Amino acid sequence: MRRPETLSLQVPAALRQPVTSLEEAESLSQQLRRFNRPQLAWLIEQATPEAEAALRQAAGLLREHYYGRKVYLRGLIEFSNVCQNDCFYCGIRRSNPSVRRYRLSEAQILDCCRQGYALGYRTFVLQSGEDPAYPAPRLARLVTEIRRRYPAAALTLSVGELSAADYRLLRQAGADRYLLRHETADAGHYASLHPADQTLQRRLSCLRELRAAGFQVGSGFMVGTPGQTADCLAQDLLFLQELQPQMIGIGPFIPQHDTPLSQAEPGRLRQTLLMLSLLRLLFPKALLPATTAVGTLHPLGRELALSAGANVLMPNLSPQEYRKDYALYDNKICTGDEAAECRACLQKRVESAGFTIDTSRGDPVDWEETKL
Image (tube, rainbow, N blue to C red; front, side, top):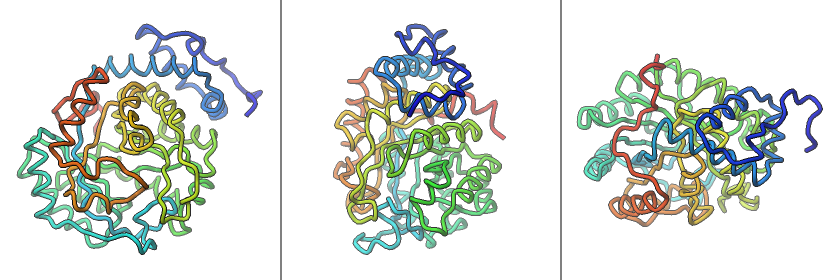
């Protein structure tokens, strides 16, 4: 991409030299928040190694200013791999006959929470496909029971597109957070990754309804999906600036062998880390996971993501016998570890990268002043 003639701002001088102070990092953050779509796209595509290093340094300074060297743990419970959607990139899409489907019972989910709480987790993330066997009233009863047993813990849901009334019901039942990646903010690109009955307009509407319901909202996108351009990624950043979510999860696209995109190239680690640093600069107070996908792409992917600005990890609390069946993409790591083994391994990895595990709920630093 040639540098657009319409650029009204020069690329910040900070991107041509090391960023060594919080003041320099905050100045760079302010400049980037004024960038328009062509400027962001140009930076994403043309960033030099020196610019990437400067962005990474600035991201680290901002993360440390707001969160120190803390890394928050979220205990992930993948309770159903049944899904009524047919996303072209996803291994648990409804038309994939090769998946061994499963659903955890409420008792199994509660047992995962029990184990996780004993291991020090103070956030549980209940994630599934869009499974009609778990409608909002059933989920609300489960949320209420988890809240009764573990009042000190935060509860996150990631169960897809529901109605505004369903979101309100789940919030009233005691769910604190909701994760719903927008995947891509470019309508044409979204259509290339989903069947016609799934629309970007509906996805964005759900995110706004989640905000109105009072959730801490998490969104995000994949990096490196087929057909994605730097302009697509720039649109993602601009949409997120409009939404202002409390959590932003991104990870590299990794193909799954039973999907229409099985032969596509995976996303690149370098671009994923660049986008993480940009997100930290654009959203200094956000919670940014170092995702399992980036760890799948590279043996030290999660450590590199922490160094690029991330501050959350989501180890798996699901029963071991089901983990391989939650096959969103190929070669997913940590499917064979027991929960205790995974907890100990993550602690060593985090400490080796120069960070520390924080066992609190890990709310956004400004949540009390911004919640509805």
